[in-house]
Image (cartoon, rainbow over all chains, first blue to last red; front, side, top):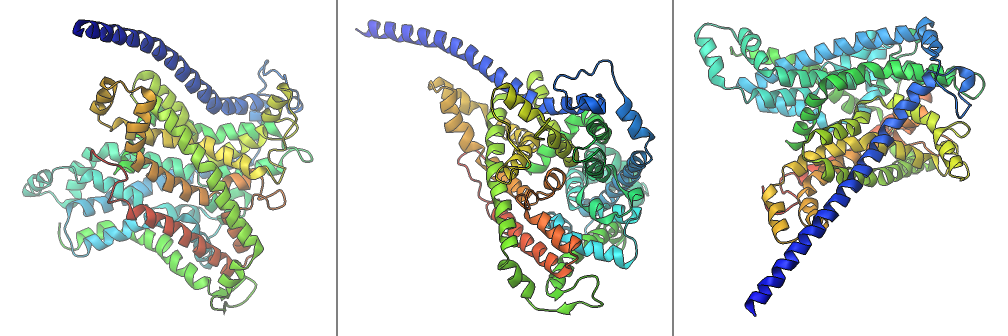
Length: 295
Length: 289
Protein backbone atom coordinates (compact mmCIF):
# COMPACT_ATOMS: atom_id res chain seq x y z
CA UNK A 1 0.00 0.00 0.00
CA UNK A 2 2.68 2.38 1.10
CA UNK A 3 4.85 1.63 -1.93
CA UNK A 4 1.97 2.21 -4.31
CA UNK A 5 1.34 5.54 -2.75
CA UNK A 6 4.95 6.46 -3.07
CA UNK A 7 4.80 5.24 -6.64
CA UNK A 8 1.86 7.42 -7.60
CA UNK A 9 3.43 10.35 -5.83
CA UNK A 10 6.56 9.96 -7.94
CA UNK A 11 4.59 9.71 -11.16
CA UNK A 12 2.58 12.75 -10.21
CA UNK A 13 5.67 14.75 -9.41
CA UNK A 14 7.24 13.66 -12.64
CA UNK A 15 4.23 14.62 -14.68
CA UNK A 16 4.00 17.96 -12.97
CA UNK A 17 7.64 18.69 -13.78
CA UNK A 18 7.08 17.92 -17.45
CA UNK A 19 3.97 20.06 -17.73
CA UNK A 20 5.68 22.81 -15.78
CA UNK A 21 8.53 22.93 -18.26
CA UNK A 22 6.09 23.26 -21.16
CA UNK A 23 4.13 25.90 -19.27
CA UNK A 24 7.36 27.63 -18.43
CA UNK A 25 8.39 27.78 -22.06
CA UNK A 26 5.01 29.13 -23.08
CA UNK A 27 5.25 31.73 -20.36
CA UNK A 28 8.66 32.87 -21.54
CA UNK A 29 7.35 33.24 -25.08
CA UNK A 30 4.33 35.22 -23.89
CA UNK A 31 6.51 37.36 -21.70
CA UNK A 32 8.99 38.14 -24.46
CA UNK A 33 6.21 38.95 -26.90
CA UNK A 34 4.65 41.32 -24.42
CA UNK A 35 7.94 43.01 -23.57
CA UNK A 36 8.86 43.40 -27.21
CA UNK A 37 5.48 44.85 -28.15
CA UNK A 38 5.81 47.35 -25.33
CA UNK A 39 9.33 48.24 -26.47
CA UNK A 40 7.85 48.85 -29.92
CA UNK A 41 5.21 51.15 -28.41
CA UNK A 42 8.02 53.15 -26.79
CA UNK A 43 10.36 53.21 -29.77
CA UNK A 44 7.92 53.67 -32.64
CA UNK A 45 7.11 57.33 -31.86
CA UNK A 46 10.83 58.10 -31.89
CA UNK A 47 11.07 56.54 -35.33
CA UNK A 48 8.16 58.75 -36.42
CA UNK A 49 10.15 61.84 -35.43
CA UNK A 50 13.13 60.69 -37.49
CA UNK A 51 10.96 59.64 -40.41
CA UNK A 52 8.96 62.86 -40.66
CA UNK A 53 12.06 65.00 -40.21
CA UNK A 54 13.52 63.36 -43.31
CA UNK A 55 10.50 63.98 -45.53
CA UNK A 56 9.76 66.90 -47.76
CA UNK A 57 6.94 69.17 -46.64
CA UNK A 58 4.67 67.98 -49.41
CA UNK A 59 5.23 64.32 -48.57
CA UNK A 60 3.93 64.38 -45.01
CA UNK A 61 0.33 63.74 -46.05
CA UNK A 62 1.28 60.69 -48.11
CA UNK A 63 0.79 57.52 -46.07
CA UNK A 64 3.54 55.62 -47.89
CA UNK A 65 6.11 58.38 -48.32
CA UNK A 66 9.60 56.95 -48.44
CA UNK A 67 12.53 58.57 -46.71
CA UNK A 68 14.78 57.48 -49.61
CA UNK A 69 16.57 59.32 -51.00
CA UNK A 70 17.39 61.07 -47.73
CA UNK A 71 16.06 64.61 -47.69
CA UNK A 72 17.91 66.67 -45.12
CA UNK A 73 16.35 69.95 -46.19
CA UNK A 74 14.36 70.28 -42.95
CA UNK A 75 17.59 70.19 -40.92
CA UNK A 76 19.13 72.59 -43.41
CA UNK A 77 16.24 75.00 -42.88
CA UNK A 78 16.50 74.69 -39.08
CA UNK A 79 20.23 75.40 -39.08
CA UNK A 80 19.98 78.20 -41.63
CA UNK A 81 17.13 79.88 -39.81
CA UNK A 82 18.34 82.47 -37.35
CA UNK A 83 16.21 81.41 -34.41
CA UNK A 84 16.85 77.78 -33.64
CA UNK A 85 20.67 77.90 -33.39
CA UNK A 86 20.18 80.80 -31.02
CA UNK A 87 17.71 78.79 -28.88
CA UNK A 88 20.21 75.95 -28.77
CA UNK A 89 23.00 78.29 -27.70
CA UNK A 90 20.74 79.79 -25.00
CA UNK A 91 19.92 76.34 -23.67
CA UNK A 92 23.58 75.38 -23.64
CA UNK A 93 24.58 78.53 -21.76
CA UNK A 94 21.78 78.24 -19.22
CA UNK A 95 22.03 74.51 -18.65
CA UNK A 96 25.81 74.31 -18.32
CA UNK A 97 25.85 77.26 -15.91
CA UNK A 98 23.02 75.79 -13.86
CA UNK A 99 24.65 72.35 -13.82
CA UNK A 100 27.99 73.72 -12.65
CA UNK A 101 26.44 76.13 -10.16
CA UNK A 102 23.92 73.75 -8.64
CA UNK A 103 26.52 71.01 -8.29
CA UNK A 104 28.87 73.48 -6.61
CA UNK A 105 26.39 74.83 -4.06
CA UNK A 106 25.34 71.26 -3.30
CA UNK A 107 28.94 70.11 -2.75
CA UNK A 108 29.65 72.99 -0.36
CA UNK A 109 26.46 72.61 1.64
CA UNK A 110 26.58 68.82 1.76
CA UNK A 111 30.19 69.00 2.98
CA UNK A 112 29.28 71.19 5.94
CA UNK A 113 26.09 69.27 6.73
CA UNK A 114 27.81 65.90 6.65
CA UNK A 115 31.08 66.67 8.44
CA UNK A 116 30.89 69.74 10.62
CA UNK A 117 28.93 70.25 13.79
CA UNK A 118 27.73 73.80 14.25
CA UNK A 119 24.87 75.54 15.96
CA UNK A 120 21.60 75.33 14.03
CA UNK A 121 22.90 72.66 11.68
CA UNK A 122 19.88 70.41 11.94
CA UNK A 123 17.43 73.27 11.56
CA UNK A 124 19.26 74.57 8.51
CA UNK A 125 19.33 71.09 7.01
CA UNK A 126 15.61 70.76 7.61
CA UNK A 127 15.12 74.07 5.81
CA UNK A 128 17.08 72.73 2.86
CA UNK A 129 15.22 69.44 2.52
CA UNK A 130 11.92 71.13 3.34
CA UNK A 131 12.07 72.57 -0.18
CA UNK A 132 11.41 69.07 -1.49
CA UNK A 133 7.84 69.46 -0.26
CA UNK A 134 7.26 72.79 -1.95
CA UNK A 135 5.91 72.40 -5.46
CA UNK A 136 7.40 74.40 -8.26
CA UNK A 137 4.16 76.08 -9.35
CA UNK A 138 3.87 78.24 -6.25
CA UNK A 139 7.12 80.02 -7.12
CA UNK A 140 5.99 81.11 -10.59
CA UNK A 141 4.11 84.32 -9.88
CA UNK A 142 6.37 85.55 -7.02
CA UNK A 143 9.60 84.85 -8.89
CA UNK A 144 8.17 86.56 -11.93
CA UNK A 145 7.39 89.63 -9.81
CA UNK A 146 10.80 89.50 -8.12
CA UNK A 147 12.67 89.51 -11.42
CA UNK A 148 10.30 92.10 -12.85
CA UNK A 149 11.05 94.44 -9.96
CA UNK A 150 14.76 94.20 -10.75
CA UNK A 151 13.96 94.56 -14.43
CA UNK A 152 15.66 91.25 -15.08
CA UNK A 153 12.98 89.25 -16.84
CA UNK A 154 13.99 87.96 -20.23
CA UNK A 155 17.67 87.68 -19.27
CA UNK A 156 20.02 84.76 -18.67
CA UNK A 157 20.09 85.75 -15.01
CA UNK A 158 16.41 84.98 -14.48
CA UNK A 159 16.73 81.68 -16.33
CA UNK A 160 19.73 80.61 -14.23
CA UNK A 161 19.50 82.05 -10.74
CA UNK A 162 16.45 80.17 -9.34
CA UNK A 163 18.04 76.83 -10.30
CA UNK A 164 21.39 77.33 -8.57
CA UNK A 165 20.45 75.25 -5.53
CA UNK A 166 18.24 72.26 -4.95
CA UNK A 167 17.22 70.47 -1.78
CA UNK A 168 17.47 67.14 -3.52
CA UNK A 169 21.08 67.68 -4.64
CA UNK A 170 22.21 68.72 -1.15
CA UNK A 171 20.38 65.80 0.45
CA UNK A 172 21.69 63.27 -2.04
CA UNK A 173 25.33 64.40 -1.70
CA UNK A 174 25.12 64.63 2.06
CA UNK A 175 23.89 61.04 2.27
CA UNK A 176 26.89 59.99 0.24
CA UNK A 177 29.45 62.09 2.11
CA UNK A 178 28.27 60.69 5.43
CA UNK A 179 29.64 57.32 4.32
CA UNK A 180 33.19 58.66 3.92
CA UNK A 181 35.11 57.92 7.14
CA UNK A 182 35.84 61.04 9.19
CA UNK A 183 39.19 59.61 10.23
CA UNK A 184 40.44 60.67 6.80
CA UNK A 185 39.68 64.33 7.56
CA UNK A 186 41.28 64.10 10.97
CA UNK A 187 44.47 62.63 9.58
CA UNK A 188 44.62 65.44 7.03
CA UNK A 189 43.88 68.06 9.66
CA UNK A 190 46.77 66.82 11.78
CA UNK A 191 48.93 67.31 8.72
CA UNK A 192 47.75 70.92 8.72
CA UNK A 193 45.20 70.82 5.88
CA UNK A 194 42.43 73.43 5.93
CA UNK A 195 38.78 72.42 5.66
CA UNK A 196 38.78 73.81 2.12
CA UNK A 197 41.74 71.60 1.19
CA UNK A 198 40.16 68.56 2.83
CA UNK A 199 37.02 69.12 0.78
CA UNK A 200 38.81 69.22 -2.56
CA UNK A 201 41.60 66.73 -1.87
CA UNK A 202 39.69 64.08 0.03
CA UNK A 203 35.91 64.41 0.08
CA UNK A 204 35.25 65.45 -3.51
CA UNK A 205 37.45 62.77 -5.12
CA UNK A 206 35.75 60.14 -2.99
CA UNK A 207 32.29 61.49 -3.88
CA UNK A 208 32.75 61.68 -7.64
CA UNK A 209 30.14 59.02 -8.50
CA UNK A 210 27.47 60.80 -6.45
CA UNK A 211 28.55 64.19 -7.77
CA UNK A 212 28.23 62.99 -11.35
CA UNK A 213 24.72 61.69 -10.63
CA UNK A 214 23.76 65.13 -9.29
CA UNK A 215 25.31 66.87 -12.30
CA UNK A 216 23.53 64.52 -14.68
CA UNK A 217 20.15 65.02 -13.01
CA UNK A 218 20.61 68.77 -13.00
CA UNK A 219 21.62 68.81 -16.65
CA UNK A 220 18.65 66.73 -17.73
CA UNK A 221 15.99 68.47 -15.71
CA UNK A 222 17.24 71.94 -16.58
CA UNK A 223 17.56 71.17 -20.28
CA UNK A 224 13.92 70.06 -20.19
CA UNK A 225 12.69 72.96 -18.06
CA UNK A 226 9.57 74.38 -19.62
CA UNK A 227 7.12 76.43 -17.63
CA UNK A 228 9.54 78.93 -16.08
CA UNK A 229 11.42 79.83 -19.30
CA UNK A 230 8.04 80.00 -21.04
CA UNK A 231 6.82 82.64 -18.60
CA UNK A 232 10.11 84.44 -17.98
CA UNK A 233 11.17 85.02 -21.58
CA UNK A 234 9.38 87.42 -23.87
CA UNK A 235 11.79 88.02 -26.72
CA UNK A 236 12.60 85.49 -29.39
CA UNK A 237 16.32 85.93 -28.64
CA UNK A 238 16.07 84.62 -25.11
CA UNK A 239 14.07 81.45 -25.74
CA UNK A 240 15.51 78.07 -24.84
CA UNK A 241 15.14 75.12 -27.23
CA UNK A 242 12.05 73.84 -25.44
CA UNK A 243 10.27 77.16 -25.79
CA UNK A 244 11.57 77.57 -29.35
CA UNK A 245 10.18 74.16 -30.25
CA UNK A 246 6.82 75.01 -28.74
CA UNK A 247 6.58 78.17 -30.84
CA UNK A 248 7.89 76.36 -33.90
CA UNK A 249 4.93 73.99 -33.62
CA UNK A 250 2.49 76.87 -33.40
CA UNK A 251 3.87 79.43 -35.78
CA UNK A 252 5.46 77.71 -38.74
CA UNK A 253 3.63 76.19 -41.66
CA UNK A 254 0.71 77.25 -43.78
CA UNK A 255 -2.78 77.60 -42.40
CA UNK A 256 -3.69 75.16 -39.68
CA UNK A 257 -1.09 72.52 -40.32
CA UNK A 258 2.40 72.93 -38.86
CA UNK A 259 5.45 72.50 -41.04
CA UNK A 260 5.97 68.97 -39.73
CA UNK A 261 9.41 68.12 -41.19
CA UNK A 262 10.78 71.37 -39.77
CA UNK A 263 9.12 70.77 -36.39
CA UNK A 264 10.40 67.19 -36.22
CA UNK A 265 13.94 68.28 -37.16
CA UNK A 266 13.70 70.76 -34.28
CA UNK A 267 12.47 67.97 -32.01
CA UNK A 268 15.45 65.82 -32.97
CA UNK A 269 17.85 68.66 -32.18
CA UNK A 270 16.11 69.27 -28.84
CA UNK A 271 16.32 65.60 -27.91
CA UNK A 272 19.86 64.85 -29.06
CA UNK A 273 21.91 66.14 -26.08
CA UNK A 274 19.64 64.30 -23.67
CA UNK A 275 19.58 61.03 -25.54
CA UNK A 276 23.37 61.22 -25.80
CA UNK A 277 23.68 61.78 -22.07
CA UNK A 278 21.23 58.94 -21.50
CA UNK A 279 23.12 56.46 -23.65
CA UNK A 280 26.43 57.36 -21.97
CA UNK A 281 25.26 57.49 -18.37
CA UNK A 282 22.09 55.41 -18.24
CA UNK A 283 23.43 53.08 -15.57
CA UNK A 284 24.40 55.91 -13.20
CA UNK A 285 21.08 57.57 -13.78
CA UNK A 286 19.06 54.49 -12.87
CA UNK A 287 21.25 53.87 -9.84
CA UNK A 288 20.69 57.44 -8.71
CA UNK A 289 16.95 57.17 -9.17
CA UNK A 290 16.58 53.96 -7.22
CA UNK A 291 18.83 55.28 -4.47
CA UNK A 292 16.75 58.42 -4.20
CA UNK A 293 13.48 56.55 -3.91
CA UNK A 294 14.39 53.72 -1.59
CA UNK A 295 15.92 55.91 1.08
CA UNK B 1 36.27 73.52 10.89
CA UNK B 2 36.54 76.92 12.44
CA UNK B 3 33.20 78.14 13.80
CA UNK B 4 32.37 80.58 11.00
CA UNK B 5 33.27 78.26 8.14
CA UNK B 6 30.29 75.89 8.07
CA UNK B 7 27.91 78.81 7.65
CA UNK B 8 29.87 80.03 4.65
CA UNK B 9 29.64 76.59 3.08
CA UNK B 10 25.87 76.31 3.44
CA UNK B 11 25.17 79.98 2.69
CA UNK B 12 24.98 79.88 -1.15
CA UNK B 13 22.52 76.98 -1.28
CA UNK B 14 20.44 78.39 1.56
CA UNK B 15 20.32 81.86 0.05
CA UNK B 16 19.02 80.59 -3.27
CA UNK B 17 16.44 78.33 -1.63
CA UNK B 18 15.20 81.02 0.74
CA UNK B 19 14.87 83.68 -1.95
CA UNK B 20 13.43 81.51 -4.73
CA UNK B 21 11.49 78.83 -2.84
CA UNK B 22 10.50 79.94 0.68
CA UNK B 23 9.97 83.63 0.03
CA UNK B 24 7.62 82.82 -2.91
CA UNK B 25 5.40 80.76 -0.59
CA UNK B 26 5.00 83.70 1.79
CA UNK B 27 4.68 86.15 -1.06
CA UNK B 28 1.97 84.01 -2.68
CA UNK B 29 0.05 83.90 0.59
CA UNK B 30 0.27 87.66 0.86
CA UNK B 31 -0.65 88.25 -2.80
CA UNK B 32 -3.61 85.92 -2.57
CA UNK B 33 -5.25 88.36 -0.14
CA UNK B 34 -5.01 91.25 -2.59
CA UNK B 35 -6.64 92.30 -5.80
CA UNK B 36 -3.89 93.31 -8.17
CA UNK B 37 -3.26 93.41 -11.86
CA UNK B 38 -0.26 95.14 -13.31
CA UNK B 39 -2.24 98.10 -14.48
CA UNK B 40 -3.16 99.01 -10.92
CA UNK B 41 -0.64 101.22 -9.15
CA UNK B 42 -0.91 99.35 -5.84
CA UNK B 43 -2.46 96.07 -4.64
CA UNK B 44 -5.80 96.45 -2.90
CA UNK B 45 -6.49 94.34 0.17
CA UNK B 46 -9.58 92.16 -0.28
CA UNK B 47 -9.17 89.54 2.45
CA UNK B 48 -10.23 86.05 1.46
CA UNK B 49 -12.34 87.27 -1.43
CA UNK B 50 -10.08 85.66 -4.04
CA UNK B 51 -10.63 82.30 -2.39
CA UNK B 52 -14.39 82.66 -2.20
CA UNK B 53 -14.48 83.81 -5.82
CA UNK B 54 -12.46 80.75 -6.83
CA UNK B 55 -14.40 78.23 -4.82
CA UNK B 56 -17.65 79.39 -6.37
CA UNK B 57 -16.20 79.75 -9.86
CA UNK B 58 -17.45 77.16 -12.31
CA UNK B 59 -14.25 77.44 -14.35
CA UNK B 60 -12.05 76.76 -11.34
CA UNK B 61 -14.16 73.82 -10.20
CA UNK B 62 -14.11 72.40 -13.69
CA UNK B 63 -10.31 72.77 -13.87
CA UNK B 64 -9.95 71.05 -10.51
CA UNK B 65 -12.21 68.22 -11.56
CA UNK B 66 -10.38 67.76 -14.88
CA UNK B 67 -7.07 67.57 -13.06
CA UNK B 68 -8.48 64.95 -10.71
CA UNK B 69 -9.93 63.00 -13.62
CA UNK B 70 -6.62 63.19 -15.47
CA UNK B 71 -4.85 61.79 -12.42
CA UNK B 72 -7.46 59.09 -11.89
CA UNK B 73 -7.20 57.80 -15.44
CA UNK B 74 -3.44 58.10 -15.86
CA UNK B 75 -2.00 56.85 -12.57
CA UNK B 76 -3.55 53.35 -12.22
CA UNK B 77 -2.57 52.17 -15.73
CA UNK B 78 0.94 53.55 -15.22
CA UNK B 79 1.43 51.55 -12.04
CA UNK B 80 -0.33 48.42 -13.32
CA UNK B 81 1.67 48.24 -16.54
CA UNK B 82 4.88 49.00 -14.66
CA UNK B 83 4.31 46.25 -12.09
CA UNK B 84 3.47 43.66 -14.72
CA UNK B 85 6.62 44.62 -16.64
CA UNK B 86 8.84 44.85 -13.56
CA UNK B 87 7.90 41.35 -12.42
CA UNK B 88 9.24 40.04 -15.70
CA UNK B 89 12.41 42.09 -15.98
CA UNK B 90 13.50 42.42 -12.34
CA UNK B 91 16.50 40.05 -12.49
CA UNK B 92 19.34 42.11 -13.95
CA UNK B 93 20.17 39.96 -16.94
CA UNK B 94 21.48 41.48 -20.13
CA UNK B 95 18.14 41.29 -21.99
CA UNK B 96 16.23 42.66 -19.02
CA UNK B 97 18.58 45.60 -18.72
CA UNK B 98 18.06 46.38 -22.39
CA UNK B 99 14.28 46.36 -21.96
CA UNK B 100 14.60 48.52 -18.87
CA UNK B 101 16.73 51.08 -20.72
CA UNK B 102 14.17 51.27 -23.51
CA UNK B 103 11.20 51.69 -21.17
CA UNK B 104 13.00 54.31 -19.11
CA UNK B 105 13.96 56.46 -22.08
CA UNK B 106 10.71 58.51 -22.27
CA UNK B 107 11.23 59.63 -18.67
CA UNK B 108 14.33 61.60 -19.61
CA UNK B 109 12.89 63.05 -22.82
CA UNK B 110 11.55 66.59 -22.75
CA UNK B 111 7.81 66.85 -22.33
CA UNK B 112 7.70 69.38 -25.16
CA UNK B 113 9.33 66.95 -27.58
CA UNK B 114 6.96 64.18 -26.50
CA UNK B 115 4.01 66.54 -26.80
CA UNK B 116 5.06 67.57 -30.31
CA UNK B 117 5.53 63.94 -31.30
CA UNK B 118 2.08 62.87 -30.12
CA UNK B 119 0.52 66.04 -31.48
CA UNK B 120 1.55 64.74 -34.86
CA UNK B 121 0.66 61.10 -34.20
CA UNK B 122 -2.78 62.05 -32.88
CA UNK B 123 -3.64 64.57 -35.58
CA UNK B 124 -6.90 63.74 -37.25
CA UNK B 125 -5.94 63.88 -40.91
CA UNK B 126 -2.42 62.52 -41.15
CA UNK B 127 -1.70 61.12 -37.69
CA UNK B 128 -0.34 57.65 -37.09
CA UNK B 129 -3.19 56.68 -34.76
CA UNK B 130 -5.89 57.34 -37.29
CA UNK B 131 -3.88 55.67 -40.03
CA UNK B 132 -3.75 52.57 -37.90
CA UNK B 133 -7.50 52.77 -37.25
CA UNK B 134 -8.16 53.16 -40.96
CA UNK B 135 -5.98 50.15 -41.70
CA UNK B 136 -8.08 48.17 -39.23
CA UNK B 137 -11.23 49.42 -40.94
CA UNK B 138 -12.28 51.59 -37.98
CA UNK B 139 -13.53 55.18 -38.14
CA UNK B 140 -11.15 58.05 -37.39
CA UNK B 141 -11.05 59.55 -33.89
CA UNK B 142 -10.46 63.25 -33.22
CA UNK B 143 -7.93 62.50 -30.50
CA UNK B 144 -7.08 66.07 -29.58
CA UNK B 145 -9.96 68.05 -31.05
CA UNK B 146 -12.93 66.20 -29.59
CA UNK B 147 -13.75 67.74 -26.17
CA UNK B 148 -14.90 64.36 -24.85
CA UNK B 149 -11.68 62.60 -25.77
CA UNK B 150 -8.78 65.08 -25.59
CA UNK B 151 -8.14 64.78 -21.86
CA UNK B 152 -7.94 60.98 -22.14
CA UNK B 153 -5.55 61.26 -25.07
CA UNK B 154 -3.25 63.42 -22.98
CA UNK B 155 -3.55 60.94 -20.10
CA UNK B 156 -2.42 58.24 -22.51
CA UNK B 157 0.69 60.26 -23.34
CA UNK B 158 1.34 60.71 -19.63
CA UNK B 159 1.25 56.93 -19.15
CA UNK B 160 3.63 56.52 -22.07
CA UNK B 161 6.10 58.96 -20.53
CA UNK B 162 5.89 57.87 -16.90
CA UNK B 163 5.57 54.08 -16.77
CA UNK B 164 9.30 53.47 -17.31
CA UNK B 165 10.16 55.30 -14.11
CA UNK B 166 7.75 53.10 -12.18
CA UNK B 167 9.26 50.02 -13.85
CA UNK B 168 12.71 50.93 -12.55
CA UNK B 169 11.47 51.61 -9.03
CA UNK B 170 9.34 48.46 -8.96
CA UNK B 171 12.21 46.35 -10.30
CA UNK B 172 14.43 47.60 -7.48
CA UNK B 173 11.67 46.82 -4.99
CA UNK B 174 11.17 43.31 -6.35
CA UNK B 175 14.91 42.68 -6.33
CA UNK B 176 14.99 43.43 -2.63
CA UNK B 177 12.47 40.69 -1.83
CA UNK B 178 14.43 37.75 -0.33
CA UNK B 179 14.62 34.92 -2.86
CA UNK B 180 14.05 32.30 -0.14
CA UNK B 181 10.40 33.33 -0.12
CA UNK B 182 10.03 32.35 -3.76
CA UNK B 183 12.02 29.15 -3.25
CA UNK B 184 9.77 28.16 -0.35
CA UNK B 185 6.70 28.97 -2.43
CA UNK B 186 8.01 26.85 -5.30
CA UNK B 187 8.65 23.94 -2.96
CA UNK B 188 5.07 24.26 -1.80
CA UNK B 189 4.03 24.02 -5.42
CA UNK B 190 2.80 27.59 -5.96
CA UNK B 191 2.73 28.70 -9.56
CA UNK B 192 3.81 32.14 -10.77
CA UNK B 193 0.33 33.57 -10.31
CA UNK B 194 0.17 32.52 -6.65
CA UNK B 195 3.71 33.79 -6.11
CA UNK B 196 2.75 37.14 -7.56
CA UNK B 197 -0.36 37.61 -5.43
CA UNK B 198 0.98 36.05 -2.23
CA UNK B 199 4.55 37.36 -2.23
CA UNK B 200 5.40 40.02 -4.79
CA UNK B 201 2.27 42.14 -4.62
CA UNK B 202 2.06 42.47 -0.81
CA UNK B 203 5.81 42.94 -0.41
CA UNK B 204 6.06 45.74 -2.97
CA UNK B 205 3.16 47.56 -1.30
CA UNK B 206 5.45 50.28 0.13
CA UNK B 207 6.84 50.85 -3.36
CA UNK B 208 3.32 50.98 -4.79
CA UNK B 209 2.38 53.52 -2.18
CA UNK B 210 5.46 55.63 -2.87
CA UNK B 211 4.79 55.57 -6.61
CA UNK B 212 1.11 56.26 -6.12
CA UNK B 213 1.74 59.42 -4.12
CA UNK B 214 4.48 60.58 -6.45
CA UNK B 215 2.38 60.00 -9.57
CA UNK B 216 -0.65 61.72 -8.09
CA UNK B 217 1.49 64.74 -7.21
CA UNK B 218 2.91 64.75 -10.75
CA UNK B 219 -0.53 64.30 -12.26
CA UNK B 220 -1.90 67.31 -10.43
CA UNK B 221 0.88 69.43 -11.91
CA UNK B 222 0.44 68.42 -15.52
CA UNK B 223 1.02 71.42 -17.76
CA UNK B 224 3.42 70.93 -20.64
CA UNK B 225 1.45 68.30 -22.57
CA UNK B 226 -1.68 70.42 -22.31
CA UNK B 227 0.13 73.55 -23.41
CA UNK B 228 1.82 71.87 -26.37
CA UNK B 229 -0.95 69.57 -27.58
CA UNK B 230 -4.25 71.36 -26.93
CA UNK B 231 -3.60 74.76 -25.34
CA UNK B 232 -6.31 73.86 -22.85
CA UNK B 233 -8.84 73.31 -25.61
CA UNK B 234 -10.97 72.32 -27.33
CA UNK B 235 -13.49 74.53 -25.53
CA UNK B 236 -11.43 74.39 -22.29
CA UNK B 237 -11.89 70.60 -22.21
CA UNK B 238 -8.28 70.09 -21.14
CA UNK B 239 -7.80 73.18 -19.01
CA UNK B 240 -6.15 71.65 -15.96
CA UNK B 241 -5.47 73.53 -12.76
CA UNK B 242 -1.95 74.70 -13.58
CA UNK B 243 -3.05 75.84 -17.00
CA UNK B 244 -5.85 77.78 -15.33
CA UNK B 245 -3.30 79.34 -12.96
CA UNK B 246 -1.17 80.54 -15.84
CA UNK B 247 -4.17 81.86 -17.76
CA UNK B 248 -5.51 83.78 -14.77
CA UNK B 249 -2.21 84.87 -13.22
CA UNK B 250 -0.23 85.68 -16.33
CA UNK B 251 -2.44 86.07 -19.39
CA UNK B 252 -5.16 87.97 -17.52
CA UNK B 253 -2.48 89.39 -15.18
CA UNK B 254 -4.77 88.84 -12.21
CA UNK B 255 -1.93 88.25 -9.79
CA UNK B 256 -4.01 87.96 -6.63
CA UNK B 257 -6.44 85.41 -8.03
CA UNK B 258 -3.58 83.44 -9.63
CA UNK B 259 -1.78 83.33 -6.30
CA UNK B 260 -4.92 82.03 -4.60
CA UNK B 261 -5.04 79.23 -7.18
CA UNK B 262 -1.39 78.48 -6.40
CA UNK B 263 -2.08 78.34 -2.68
CA UNK B 264 -5.07 76.01 -3.09
CA UNK B 265 -3.07 73.66 -5.31
CA UNK B 266 -0.23 73.83 -2.80
CA UNK B 267 -2.62 72.87 0.01
CA UNK B 268 -3.89 69.89 -1.98
CA UNK B 269 -0.38 68.67 -2.77
CA UNK B 270 0.71 69.24 0.82
CA UNK B 271 -2.15 67.08 2.07
CA UNK B 272 -1.07 64.29 -0.28
CA UNK B 273 2.56 64.65 0.80
CA UNK B 274 1.65 64.52 4.47
CA UNK B 275 -0.30 61.34 3.78
CA UNK B 276 2.97 59.94 2.46
CA UNK B 277 5.01 61.13 5.44
CA UNK B 278 2.53 59.80 7.96
CA UNK B 279 2.90 56.30 6.57
CA UNK B 280 6.67 56.40 6.16
CA UNK B 281 7.27 54.97 9.62
CA UNK B 282 4.93 52.03 9.45
CA UNK B 283 5.56 50.11 6.30
CA UNK B 284 2.53 48.89 4.45
CA UNK B 285 3.61 45.29 4.28
CA UNK B 286 4.19 42.48 6.70
CA UNK B 287 7.33 40.55 7.59
CA UNK B 288 10.86 41.17 6.33
CA UNK B 289 12.27 44.53 7.10
